[in-house]
Amino acid sequence: MELPQLDPIQAAVDRLVEQLLPLESEEIDLVDAWGRALAEPLVADRDSPPLDVSAMDGYALHLDDCSDRPLPVVGVAAAGHPPIELSPGTAVRIFTGAPIPLNADCVVRREDTQESAAVVRIMLPCDRLYRGMNIRRRGENSAAGATILPTGTLLEGAAVAAAASFAPRRVSVRRQVRLTILNTGDELVSPGETVAPWQIRDSNGPLLQAWIARHRWLHLTHIRPVGDTLEAVADALHAAYTTCDAVLLTGGVSMGDTDYVPQAIDQLGGTIHFHRLPIRPGKPVLGATINGKPVLGLPGNPVSVAVTSRVIAEPVLRRLGGLAPPTPHRPPVMLSNPDERTLDLTWYRLVQIDTSGSARLLDLRGSGDLVALSQSHGFLEFPPGQTGPGPWRFWSWAS
Image (cartoon, rainbow, N blue to C red):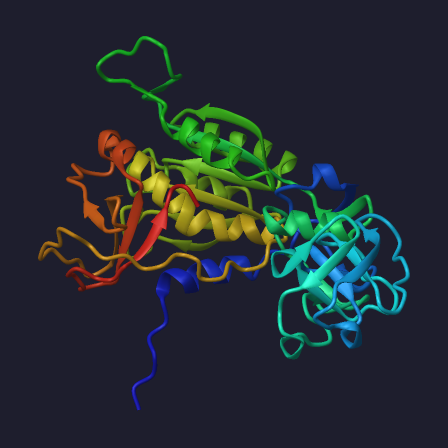
């Protein structure tokens, strides 16, 4: 029997993730918790709905009182008020979300009635009415004490709405992951500065800053350039991991004479868990720990940084931030302009997505092609030796 092949990239990331634990929790106001990970389950403090309520605007009545004769309207039931009592042989006008009157057992939609000032006539045959009609029953969404959101849920979108409905004013979340970015290279100057032909403006720092800013569970504390010497890299690394939870480096991880990151990690007593993975772009990527804190060395070219920050760094940082492992949320897409090119490693290729949802390969001129990167919507993942129209896994810059 042929055994399934392990994904070497996922296996490498998993080895590093297994060395880490989520950061400690903190209790903060719910209004400040958006974008953070729950440190404990969100439990319903009461039934939802908390009592029987109307699902429609209409008239509440007792089923036995249905007839072809008009019913006197004796009151109005509105949301935000306690339930009123329904007298036999009468109806109560009711609004969506209002408590069902005592003794009522069905709600007829307003459009199925004929209304006047003091009475209402039910226009549906009585045999079409039933007990519970247009009524949302107490606890039908969840019962008090039920787990609404598990530990690790990212509080955004609908999860924030659930927390607002069921949580106390303060919630327990994982604290933000404090990050330092170190950009290595004597050739780097700050954005906006005048550059000589042998220099380049730093694009990796702003690229990572923009990515980090999209995640409230991350917090960038420092970003600094680092010269191409072993002493400079080791000093910068030491200062970073002693004050932060994780370090992102760009450059200095390849095989050149000035690529000092592996040596610096070894000098500081760190452990390298992987170095050089079968991927393009980003093959030199490195994952290590120093004093139990992750150090992620991303290759220096901007396309490599963009790709490896998503594929390699994000799962590691999610672990620190206490986020649950992501569920598959990247629907595969078809490629509109496939070619015959293949590689014997995992190939991440930049694409644009058109209005039909199909992907189009961009003409990438190498890992330093910032123009193609800026025009892309994300990248497709091609397993080793595979090509064709797909479907392929799509990684979006927007997600």
